[in-house]
Amino acid sequence: MPSPLYHIALSFLLRTRLREALRLIEHYGSAEEAWRHLDEPGMAEALDHARRELEWINAHDIRVWTLADSDYPYRLRQCPDRPLLLYGKGNISPSDGHIVSIVGTRKPTEYGKELTSRLVRELHERLDSLTVVSGGAYGIDIAAHRAAISLGVPTVFIPAHGLDRIYPYVHRRDVVASLANGGLLTEFPSGTEPLAQNFLQRNRIIAGLADAVVVVESREHGGSLVTARMAVDYDRELFAFPGRPDDLSSQGCNGLIRDHKAQLVNTADDLVAAMNWTTRTTRPQPVQTQLIGLMDELTPRQQLLLQKLQEAEDGLHINLLVMETGLSYSDVSSDLVMLELQGLVRSLPGGIYRFVR
Image 1 (tube, rainbow, N blue to C red):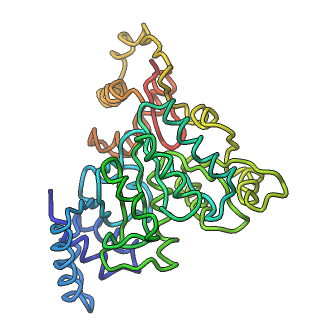
Image 2: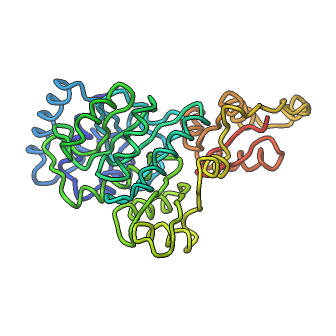
Image 3: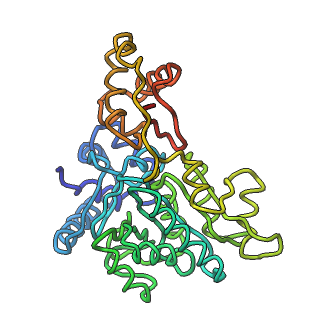
C-alpha cells in the first residue's frame, strides 16, 4: 500500500481548495506527482507537517484510506467533493453491506429517540449486514449509535475534528464501545478542533458514505437538513419520519416530505422496501432458464458484468463494478442499460445494480 504522505501534505497545503487538489491528483495520476509539479508557498512546511502527522498515525494505530487505495469507500469516491483521505480508528469496513446514516436534532423528543432505536433494531432484524453511521452529536446521533452498539451492529462515528480527541467528551464511553465493531472516521488530521465549519464539512461524509440517509427529527433549520441536502446532491436515497404539523421538532422532516425531497417512512419495512433490499426471510428466485442461451448473445464485457453481479447477492454499486472490472465508467453504464433492457439486471436506488435471479 503506497504511503499517504503526499495526500496528507496536499490536504495541509490546499485545505481550502479541495477540488483543486482532486483535479491535480487526477491530472498527474498520483498525489506525489501532483506535489512535484506544484510551486506554491508553504510547501516545505506542509510536507514537514505531513511527516509529523504520519509519525502520529503510525504511533496510534490509525488506518488511512487515500484515493489511491482500492478499498477507499466506493460510495464516497463518486462524490465530486470527496475527501482526499480518511483517518480511521477501530474496526471499520466503510464499503461493506448496507450502510444507513441516521441524523436529526440535538434536542429530540422521547418519541424521536424511541423511533431511532426502533429503526435500528428493525433494520438489524431484517438485514444480514448493516452499518449505522452518524455524527456522534447529542440527540438523534448518539441515540442511533447507542442503539447499534446495544445490538452488536457496526456503527461509525464521523467527528468534526481529529482523532486525538473526542467531542463531546461525555460520549467517550460510547466511542470506545464502538471500536471493536465500528469506530471513528474523519478527514481531519490530529490537532483539528471541533469548529462550527468543520461540522458542516463532515456532513458530506455522513451523506456520501451511505446507501440511505434517514432524518428522524429536525427543526425547520438545522445541521441534519444540510446533510439531507447533500444526500440529494449525491443521489442518495433520503427518508424522513413525519411528525404532527404543530411539532417544532418535526418541521424539518415534514418540509422534506412536502417538497418531495425525502420519502416518508414509518417503519424499517418502508425503508427496506423502498431500497429493494433482500431481507433475511426473502427467498431467492430461480435463475432464469433462458440465461444460458442469452449468455451467448452477450458481449464479453456484458458477460463479465453479469458474472460480477451474479456473485453479489445484494448487488453492486456501479463505481464498484468499474473498479472490479477495470472497464471505463461509460462502458459499464451503457452495458448495464443493455442488460437491464434484456431483463437480466435491475437498477436500484443509489446507483446499485442487481442480477435478476
